[in-house]
Length: 223
Image (tube, rainbow, N blue to C red):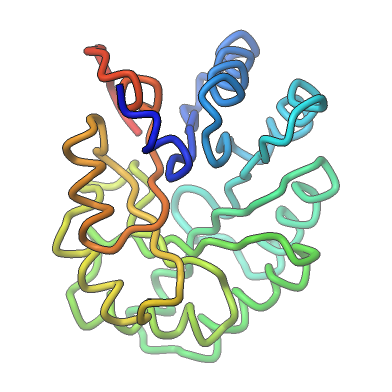
């Protein structure tokens, strides 16, 4: 049993084919195990917020997920709607194109637009590290901190690769000791969770939260 890992975990369900019964299970598990949040696509925030009305578990909403290719205005509007539906945290996919083009103003501006729409909620910015070289990862982390977000995050879990120890170490070095780093994608057991935390992660995104904290063996597919 590893209940000590529960406060690190965003218990996640982001499949496109999710049904209400799946969300009900997610919220029940999240509350039972005292995870940091349950994380869902923005369309499901109101439903999950209602389910969790009698407990303190926040609902985290994705923004611009999973490609990050929407306009800054669209991301801000999605964030505003998620907050009005009850989201306590936001996980936003950055403009990967702006990052690769070294377009700092565009990259920083869209994060600040989402922050303005968030009403002070915790904002995590997803870089999708599997698409970036180390210089781009470092740059993205530094710009994310500059923009005022609370976390830099490795992955959506829907790309060609997820979190790695080396990427978490790189992001931690880029942002320093007092900034959030979230590892996500491919974290399915307590050993991997421990390795990510040792590398510098302060939050973990995983659909395997129950298996991690109970050390249960499950057939786990996807993020």
